[in-house]
Length: 306
Image (cartoon, rainbow, N blue to C red; front, side):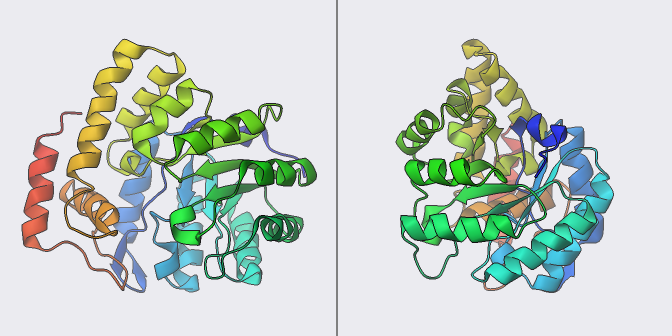
């Protein structure tokens, strides 16, 4: 499969777009339109829909298909659109990929199936079977906290050697030792793109050669994350330091309200609501922040100078 120049040139910040909702089965279309324009105007390099931040596992297939249609239609080729197709059923992954291709998406992203924990040889077989059935290039998605398995660097290399349709990886392990070993293992694969998820470590990863960051905070403040990426690419330590501090301020104040694993996404969605961009409705089984937590988010945003 021919990889487009647009994908080859995609470097920088690719926000994992939230899925703005009015209720469990209805997109907040006005909010989605504002959000897409907000991040594009912030200078991002691409968009990633239906990832972890997009609540893909909590929304219906019909809603996933609609989300892809609406985003691709609005983006209209201005920047690449990547679509998450992670599923426990390879058939559903392929079906969504075909839909994404029809809508004009540029690539798809797939983490390992997340119910049964696969072994490394099984991952090689899985991605072989998946890649051969896809109409679009594929990014691997290393998300061990949710899939119960790490895609080991040797496994990534084996997949890349045999599947030219697999063109990169997003790593959300928050494990810099893993990421450095991955970079070393893939050092001769010059066009293989390596993105890092956790925004707290994006600058360090880019300085060491990462392609960019898939950072949730770029939904709120895209310019900040783009500026941090560019400073890291230039290895401008003096410029990186204050920008990194702002990112850590966001991480420690917006994502830590509440006591549960959902606090990151609840905080992010609440902040976008406070900023007037879109609804903060969370798909079941979760719910948006109540008034007390919302007040904490408002206070946190007032203290962030971006």
